[in-house]
Image (cartoon, rainbow, N blue to C red):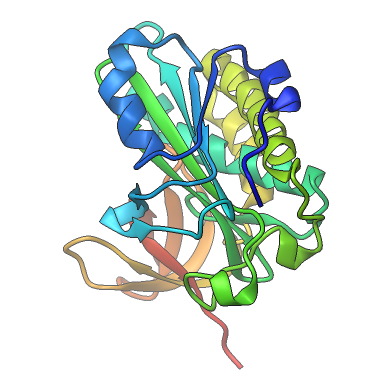
Length: 259
């Protein structure tokens, strides 16, 4: 698949959209230029050559087979840690909704912001805080075949039956930006965490599941995911301590299946 300028649908959503034929990392680029860019500036490509995932992982894909997009959400007023903690979750909801609009009905979230279809990863979100705003990066697998997938537990829009034509990147980008901009506007005006919980929790396939959480510098946590707290942290009920509830701010979550 080739790049799809003039990106008619996407440019109708975002007047500050920059498309690159190739880019090492859309997130790194926006982080470096955050001071000069307007609110909701967008950088996107279908050829990211040095992409990064969560926890420093490398994110790569054959040229033209995946969309990488980053958006600068500028700070408005004082930075509130509680409010900032919800932004990655809101971005994940935006991508899940966009993917469903494209025809993948079973898409949902694994906390904090991976988009899954039947347990296979379709998209991931990486947010980075700067002095001027938060850069919200997303990677979405577009036209990858089974042979292209980076890991067997991944999937793509094409593998989920979405037509892989020359306009797929434009349709996907426009759908995501439309959902993201609407949710960011809501996120900026909401003071009650209960409102954000009501937006995010229905999208989380993690809730009610037995999970393993691998946390930096801590032993693995086994338990049942029960919900989100006021900061967007995952509440996991663990057997240790007995019937203890642990709020997880960061970590890798695995959905466990017990026969």
